[in-house]
Length: 153
Image 1 (cartoon, rainbow, N blue to C red):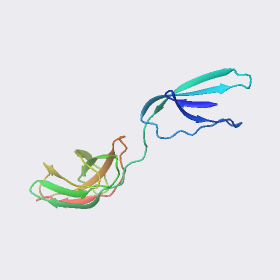
Image 2: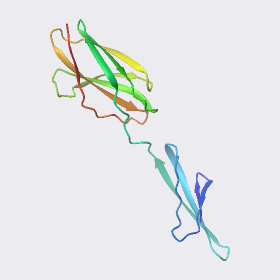
Image 3: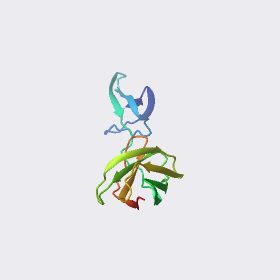
Image 4: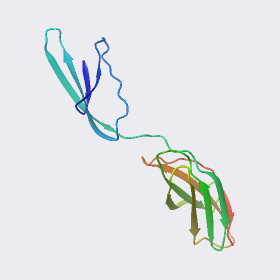
């Protein structure tokens, strides 16, 4: 048996199980084909279409988070994780500790770098809780529930 992905030979197997392991497929549509050869020289081929949907693993969390409450605003600083496919950090804001709250802003980021964001239009005299969730290029969002608080002047 010969195994093909997108018309490129990826494996040959003459054992009774007839298997081929394929890795490294890019996200998107592919055609997987197999051609069988008989001892008398006959061949038979078949194929299927598959769609690779990408990774399902969310990136790691941010670290070294610091927040400074200001006049109706808060400035957040953090270090991004090293995940090579990291693309964004979503910042959720809540007036209730333990509640995720609402998505306030999304920041485009790079792996292993320091980032910051300023959250405006907060109410003076209140305490807010912030949750920072990383997102990768496949839209996998880290589901951390870690919160960081700031008192607003």
